[in-house]
Length: 526
Image 1 (cartoon, rainbow, N blue to C red):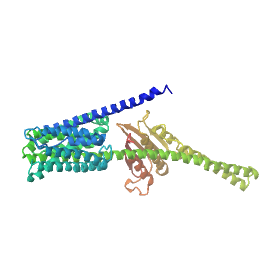
Image 2: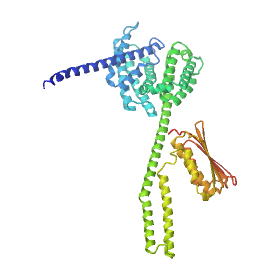
Image 3: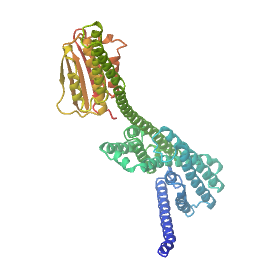
Image 4: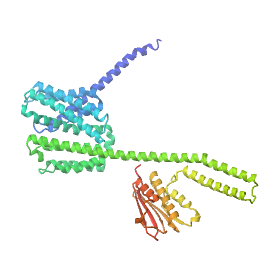
């Protein structure tokens, strides 16, 4: 009892120290979030067109992303950062009324909290914006949240007599589009890169990634800095980012475009700077929003396509594994049932032959001997079938499987078969090998059944990531244009070639033989 008392006495101290450590980490996180929010606000203020008009407001996207990813308990960081930003408005040359500042503070806080809640509701938690419905949900959440802030902010400015009634419409529009533009740039960037930063960096930090970013910078600068209407020329680079780099490349490209567009226009350069302040603000805001929404939707569609291709490949791999398992089950069942029944039937036949006088040249004896031979033949074929079902024909590679296939042709067919293949193993995926073997087996079977050929050949060649399979003969041939619709063997071979992303062609003519040609990738991606 006395030995445990000191331990029990120290437990409250340990708990208190752990609570203090958690509180310190939370306080540090709140301060860091407030600093980040304040820094994003200073970036927005540095790029504003006049002392009071900012085209985009980046803190909105940062705040919503933080509460969406980290949780609503981090709201004090947003509150402190917003408080620091708004406190400066009370000490400017033309300070705002304190009531208007308080209203702006409440509206911006509601905007961030409501935006995070709507995101969780509409797109779930930890979304990567790699689906079109998630992008649509994000846009809906941002539109509603920023409309709330614009409404509260506009009313607070009107009640504080900062703006007149006739200015409320344009003021609300500028506020709403500015917050929306800032959010649609920063929020997707944060969500995409926060999920797996290393994967995003690896995807961008390539030669093609460098060329992409250079193209975005060049075209975005040219699109905005030129005095001519060339703003659309940046879209090929954005499409490139969406197709080749999906969400990480798309969101980074949009952020670069927004930064250059606002920065160049704020420096009184380019097409937008020649317009009146209201038109300049509206033009750049809509330009950024449309470019961002288009790029995000396109990258989401590409991501869905990639995900669908991966799921299809995985499904095919599972189906292949299940087919092998089913084939092995059938082999076991045949061995345990049909094969044993044939063996028993042979024993019963021999027993009956002995009972009737084995070897006597009677009609019944000859019949029983013929039955015995048929049963033994059926046993041999059953053993061969069970062996084929129980093994993987391309276990040792495509060339080895085709070599065994050519050797298995019975001598009675009087068909000379030549196999032309490289001596070294071919670097082919298992599925490609299996499908090419099935095509070769089907084609050679057609030669034996229909071609009336004396010679046949199988040629296999692999180069530059592709593999070519040719099966030819010197038989009677046929008119390719008159290929019968019910020829399931040709349809099966063509389908197998298409399944691995290859092409299937037949060259034939009456009296000139037939050549089946397959050209496929060495790796089907599965």
